[in-house]
Amino acid sequence: MPVPKQILSQIKAIIPPLNGSLHKGQSGRVGVLGGALDYTGAPFFASISALRIGADLSHVICSPTAAGAIKSYSPDLIVHPILGEGESDETVRSTLSSLLSRLHVLIVGPGLGREDYMINFAKLAVNIAKEQSMYLVLDADALWMIGQDLSLIKGYRRAVLTPNVMEFKRLSENVKIDPEIPPEERAMHVSRALGGVTVLQKGAEDIICTNTGEANKEEAKLNQIPEGESAEERMVVDVPGGLKRCGGQGDILSGAVGTMMAWGKCFETGGFGDGSVPPSRIPLLAAVGGSMVTRTASRRAFSKNGRGMCVVTQDMIPEIGGAFAEIFGEGEKGWGTSTTKEGGKL
Image (cartoon, rainbow, N blue to C red; front, top):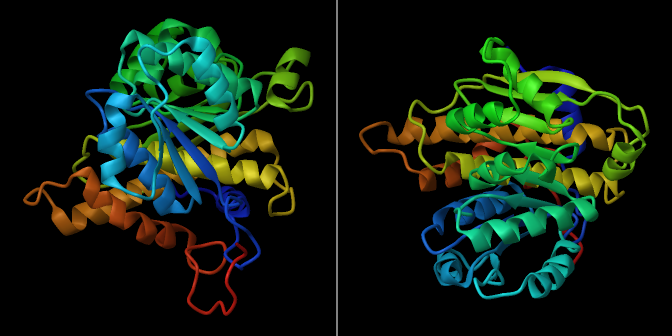
């Protein structure tokens, strides 16, 4: 089933225009928190995908044990090795608060691992992000983390969770979803159990749900929405993907969703656009758009490499631009054209 034209129109509304009117930073500043001793690829894939989709700046917040490797992968990434095992919460909180205040979205989880100190700093970052009303994407071990403490994210409607099959099963058990509920309906129940967090359930078809209930006074203040606002929406993205799913595809999805949420934040704060899309819709729109781009990039990579060449995540990265153009077209709200005579602002 095609994504409705109204949804595509709203997604395009939050895409920064390529017309020379914006300066550096107004097309999204993205942060990825993850990267420890054993995991350096995942935060790289998430952060470089953000740039390839169109974010202006991409930051990686990681352990010093991962920083050297991540820096060597690309000079385009800004790497902050501040999550040292011996660092105090007070020191890290001060640095994180300053850094996150300059970003539009925080992606938590790619390459996070489950070491105590990394989980502790990830929790700290999530709480700071909530204090600053940032958009959040949680993936991989960040989903395990919130499964241990649901209060970290419950009721925060500016977040998207991106579980795969096993992560979704575990999350469903964490929030005590009745296993007799039909599989295609469970994401809606998980969203409601978590107080309206948007859930992107990855699979043969990606199921994206937001189910909030009416916002009370406290929830309205936390999420910067009108008291009483509610949403109940379910989208299925069945855009064809590749026939082989490589291990880092979820990291590319996180980067894609995060970038679109960063664009949504710029749109929300008046960087561009006409304000026609309510901020409460941005997580769902970003999840749909990110899913479409990632699945299309996967298909394009597979069509060139197939099983014989063994598609890997790096094969998908060069396909992101073409995938975006395939979905959103060209022009100032698509992948751009070569006809613009004037450059952007510095």
